[in-house]
Structures are given as structure tokens and as C-alpha cells.
Amino acid sequence: MENIVVTLENQIKTALDKFIETQGKKLSKNLKVSIERPKNRSYGDFSTNIAFHVSKEYAASPVEIAQTISSFIDNKSLIESSKVTAPGFINLVINKQWLKSQVNEIREASSSFGDSNIGNNSNVQVEYVSVNPTGVLHIGHARGAVIGDTISNVLSKNMFNVIDEYYLNDSGKQIEKFNESVKIRYQQLFNINTELPEDSYTGEDIIDVAQQIKNDHFDKFLHGNLNNELESIAHNIIVTKISDSLSELGIHFDNWFSEKSLFNNGQFQTCLDRFDKQNLLIDRDGAKWLETTKLGQEKDNVILRSDSTPTYFSTDIAYHFDKFSIRNFDQVINVWGADHQGQIPRLNSALTALNIDTKKLKFILVQMVRFKKGEISEKLSKRLGTAIPLTDLVDEIGADACRFMFLSRSPDSQLEFDLDLATSQSSENPVYSVQYAHARTCGILENAKNIGHKLSPSTLSKLNSSFEISLIHKMLDFHEMIEVVIKTLEPHHLAHYSTDLASDFHTFYQHCRVISDNPTEFEMTNARLQLVDATRIVLKKCLDLMGISAPKKM
Image (cartoon, rainbow, N blue to C red; front, side, top):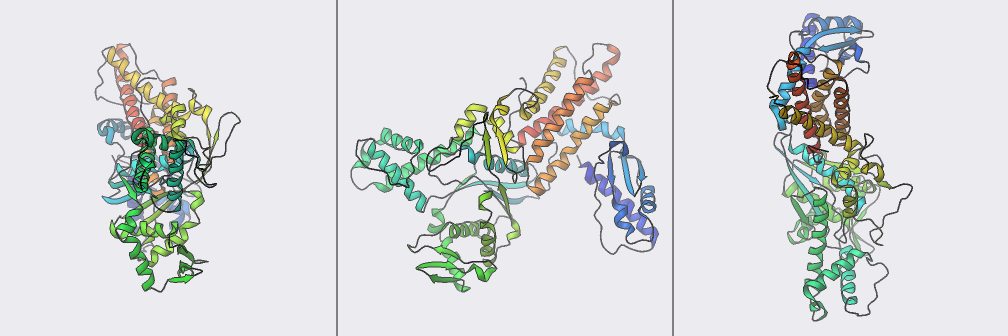
């Protein structure tokens, strides 16, 4: 199925070309035809303001030009009629028979409805979460995880070859601190009186790791120099816990990328060598600096600390060098917390110096979440162990509610996550409303089947009420919405659309009796059942893309 907006744009472009031919003068530049839905639907189903742009080059008013362009519009199939309104809009009414026929198109497309080849088999990496493996995930990490996973779902269905990746910071000072914290907690389990340093990780998850090591190996690591083995085991335990937490939220990564590999495989040193050849490295205060001021930044940045350990900035550079220059991704999407926004300009400048096209690098900056339960809120701190584990949130309200609530707002907007609303079974709870709409469609179709009504393609001419037509229009908006998600990388449009579609379906159901036992209304029943089935398909598509279950009963 074609995107109706794209089809309309092409038809208006054809009419515009015919208009230009009559003028004997070409436009000085190509104009993009834009199609929108008018706020006042009494004007029509769609509208274009192309006449305003054209009038700037011809000695005629927008209304006059709109009338001429309108006369060239093909009114034989998709467009039923066009009408010009002041000060120069061309309003379009869609052919009702064509519109109704799309119900069968949706049903024939089934689960592939809305899929396109817009990605053209390009290779895309989506990196998200990437929290230091120094403890279990807490609820503050969940929003970026759901946003990244949903973007990946949408891209994958539109011919992008997507790799979901978690970047493991498995080296550096925080890992050293984690290893030391686990070692001390392990010793304490054997009543060895060792105090934790002040800046250690003190959460219960560290004790759990130590306890698991004791359960599996007892006192093995109290004897001999086995620190490396202990650290490896602790790392694997915590990464498994992170993976299991994400699995509860329906998130699975294609690749877990080790920061250590940047050093073992030489990418880190390659970056340093290339900077050195460009005279961008300088020793200062015992550390090695990248002179990012030469690259347009306000200040230089440390690459290697005075103890020769790399900074986060330097490993970020090497990691992105690996993404583009080693693995050759066509596009890279990073889902980062909004607090990392200041790191983007300096990273881009460094990558440009490595001859990497930063236009291929996209950032989604995710704002903080404030969790609300009644009037209680709590500041999260991973280091002090007061953060609420992600698994606790999923256990309390379920993965579906978690995912929908995290998708309900634009990533760059702060989100208040109302835990009470997320668990309520009412129309005020958006995920409940959408899932209930899907379950209702399934229930209607099952009821029809039980009474012996076989759903079969037939004339859809009986679908004439405003509620039916509005529902079909909303389903056809799906294509455009998906293209917006792909273009903007903002999956909240998917959540908003599914809520609107569910609302339109509930309204249709309230006003239009679907199954009638009157034999004279067989065609009406059959047509409405097809409409219900098409709605089921689109609702399920939305839920699938959001990683949310589509229950048949509720």
C-alpha cells in the first residue's frame, strides 16, 4: 500500500507541472508540494498551500493560481473533488469508494501493513543503555532502553539492517572501584574485617554478586593471587543481571561491545596516531591532551590522564572510529541521557579530524524521568544503592505499561511517570485503552465466528457513517506517522497514534452496531466486520512496534 500523502503529493505535483506548461515560464527553483490535514475537516480531507509559493513567481494571486492548478487535478480515482478557498488553499476530498477499498488492502497486507523499503538495505547501528556494568539497572535507565528498542523495531520493518548494541565500559576507574567493592564484600562474607573505602559501591546488588561468588566457589578467592579470575566472574554476573533485567522489558541486544577490545584490537592507538600526525596532541600537566581548540572547540580535552589511563572522551572517540571506519555503518544512532549533551560537539569535532562524516551520527537525548506514586518521589543514586531496580518496576506494573509510559512523551521532554495511572484499568490509562481496543476487535471477530458468520471479502459500500470513514482515515495515517518516526527518530508519535486509533475505534463501536441478526443487514455486518479486522491489524502493528503485547482477551 502506498502512503496516501505521498500519492497526493505526486498528483498535485503533476497538476503543478501542467500549470507551469501553460505559463511559458519555468519556476526558478523546485518547490516541494506539502500536504496537510486541515484543522477544520469541513474544508476537506487534505489541503495544500502550493499556490502561495507559486504566486511569488507569477503575476497572479494565490487564489487565481490555486484555481488553475485545481483544474488540472485528476479527479478520477483517489481524489473525488478539489475546492479552492481564500486566501489560496486547495482543499481535497478523497473518493469514498477508494477510501473504503483500503480496508481490503489493509487486510491483504496483514502484518506487513505499513512496511516500506525506505531504508534501502542501509546498515544502521542503534546504541542505547550502555550503563557501566557496576550494578544492576535501575528505573532511571529504562526510558532510553525502550526508546532505543522501539526505534530499532521501526527501522527494521522498513528495510534498514539494524544492529542493537550495548557498549560495555569494562575498563577504567569505575570498574576498578566495582571490582574492589565486590572483593571486600566477598571477604566480609567470611567475617574478614575489611572496610569499604568511602567512594565504594555500597548497594545490595554488590552484596548479591559477592554472595553468588561464595555460593559457587566458596572460599577459593581467599587463597592465592586470583584477582583476575574473581573480577572476570563478578563482571559476568553483573552483565548477566543487566541482560536479564532488559529481557524482562522485552529488550535483547544483537551485540555487547567490550571497551577493552578497543585497546586489544588497536583502534584506540590508531586514533592517537592519527591525531599525532595532525599535531593535535600535546603534553600538559603530566597528561596528554587533544587540542580540540584547533578543531573549533572552546577548550582542549584530556585524552590520557597523568596516570596514563584513558578518559571517557578518548574511548568514545575510539568506539565511534570502530563504528564508522572498521564496521562501516551507514548510520549510527546514539540514545544518550540529556546530561551528556555537552559531550556531542567535542566528539563530533574529534571524529571530523578522523575523516568521519558526522552527518551519519544521530543523537537522541533522553530527558530525566520523575516517578510519582501518590506524592512520594525519591532521588536515585546508583553509587549509594538507593536506586530502585528496573526489575522491581517491571514486577509492579508490567513490561507493557512500562514501555508505553516511557514512549508517551518526546525524548527531549521530561516525563512524569505516574505509577498509579500505569496500573489502572481505565480509559485514562493509555496502554490499557489501546490493548482493550485490540482485545475488543478480537472479541467481536470471535463472536461472529461462533455464531457462524464467515468473514469474506465483499462490497464495502455500506460503510457510510462518519465514524466508519473517520476510522479508515485514521488507519491510513499510519504510513505517514511511521515516516515521521523514521525521519525524526521520535517514537512517541507511535504511542500517540495508537491512542488516537483506539479512541476512534471505541467511538465507532459505540455508534455502529457491528453484528446484526437481521438477514437483510448481512452486507452491513460483513462490511463492518472487515473494518474491525483491519483495525485489529493496525492496532497489533502499533503494539508490536512498541514491543507491547496485543492481548485477545482482557
